[in-house]
Length: 109
Image (tube, rainbow, N blue to C red; front, side, top):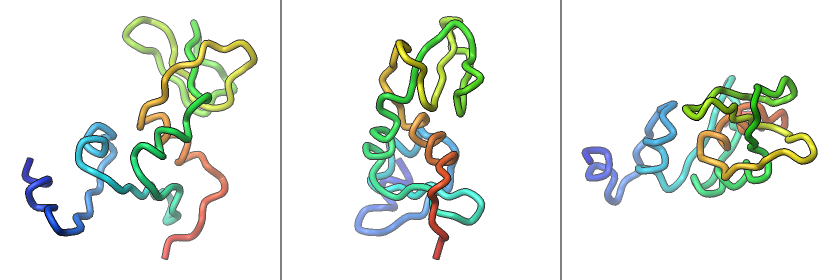
């Protein structure tokens, strides 16, 4: 609430790894890693770039760029899915993970 009130009519720089904070507070995001801009745009656009690239499986896919066990016991994998994979709705975190792995980044000014 403090950040939202402070931001009215101003630009606020928020540095966080908490994608929930970004989703609630930001209308424009820049993802940086290693001094390079990996993504710049809206949170919705960051989420959208993970569409078709998140899938569920009974094990972590070794070809996935990221993967972890969920509360249901399945694995959530992010990257280039294998044929026939059960695709999931992407989240902002999925887009963030893919942006960090993007090799086509540009140098930060």
